[in-house]
Length: 199
Image (cartoon, rainbow, N blue to C red; front, side, top):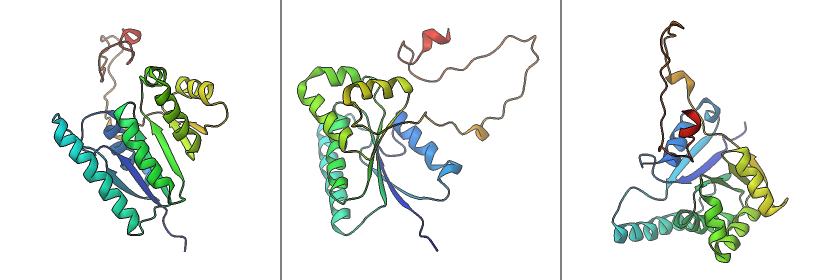
């Protein structure tokens, strides 16, 4: 009998605000994950206190290293990352996970990745280092995949994976065509989220 694959998913706490936590919760509840064992490792929780945040970063990194030192060896590490401080925090986890010899996936949730990339040579070097070594680079759109290929050439193994939606949670009653349509938009209002395109 084949053992159930163990995946370590790293990202913000599942009850944290923001899109990464929402995506992680959705994937963890999806039918597609039923044959996998996924252990979520929270790298950050909501706080506006910078001293508390810094202490939390150190504690959680230490806890992760401690788990690895104890012999914890998932079959795959799946790291959710954004940009700026999020990217550098996850870069530390990436290096630690890579040292185990197990494959590591980087799942980029970074709408402003181009501005991060262009901001300095240090950022570009960090991005190239991580994306080149990742077993797979998961992006949210075809456009992001094209952008990264332009940066990396064939070094980055890119997979486009759109954000999931659990359709069985929606129970819509069809309305007669004569009624005015009602649209629901969820997300930050602005050009990046496509609000103006929708209107």
